[in-house]
Length: 172
Figure 1 (cartoon, rainbow, N blue to C red):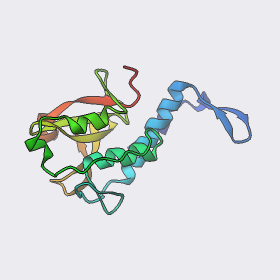
Figure 2 (figure 1 turned 120 degrees about the vertical axis):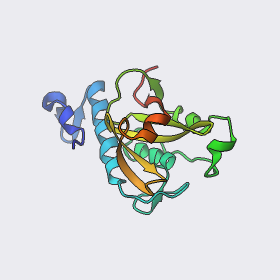
Figure 3 (figure 1 turned 45 degrees about the horizontal axis):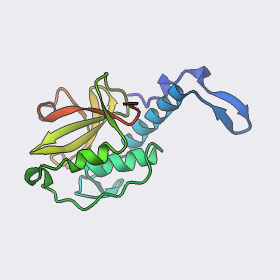
């Protein structure tokens, strides 16, 4: 298991002065990706609870994304509107996708740590997982009743509902 720091070259950080560092944009992205993975792993085992966002107490897949990316410094605090537990069965509006696309874009390149895997359940995209390293993802999974690591391609349920990968670091 990797936390992502092994992907940051040792000479990538330049000391400028006491407590100051200069990093390239690519290195800054790798540092953020590592922070996302490290934060996501802290949530593992948290019980699944609709609309909750408290590590160790309860979280759903959308709130997990908001909490992890906020704590890692990738996005600002994100408030979500109330949503019914079965919204994906009765609506055609891509509300969940709209939240994701505020800060991330769909990519066609291979997934990297910290990217987001999205899934269609019912009529709309309504489930997400954080890529730890492809094919390993972490998600708040109601059926498992907590936040778990999973294999995105070996798990038949995930594989059958997979839509694509979104990345907060996409330039598109």
